[in-house]
Amino acid sequence: CGEAGDVSADAEFDKIYKDTGAHSGWVRDVAWAPSVGLPVNTIATCGEDKMVHIYSQAGAGQGWVCKKLPALEAVAWRLSWSLAGSVLAISAADGKVTLWKEGLDCEWRLLDSINDGV
Image (cartoon, rainbow, N blue to C red):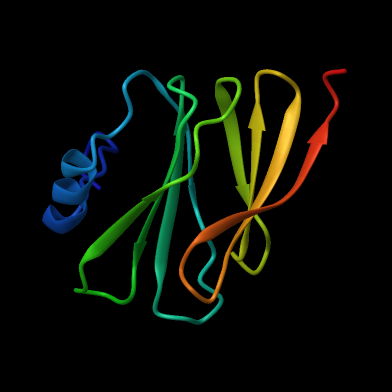
């Protein structure tokens, strides 16, 4: 962190963020998954473009990888990781909360969807 509280990403993260297209609107939330003793970094971002991007790094000094979840039906507002950092909850403007988990094949899958907006 700088004196003004600015945070700078490492060059590798900055490159993957820009190369993957980033978000095409306001970023509404960013959530860093707890690593629970594993040398893994995982960051999720969501935005007004109805997209959620999940960036992961296998260990310090390793390259970053970006996975994009399928577009949501409404603007994504908030993200929250489970205590173990294995399940990502996404809340959207339509009142729907979706739960996502990464499989052994490194693909993210929808676990459940809760719709309180009905």
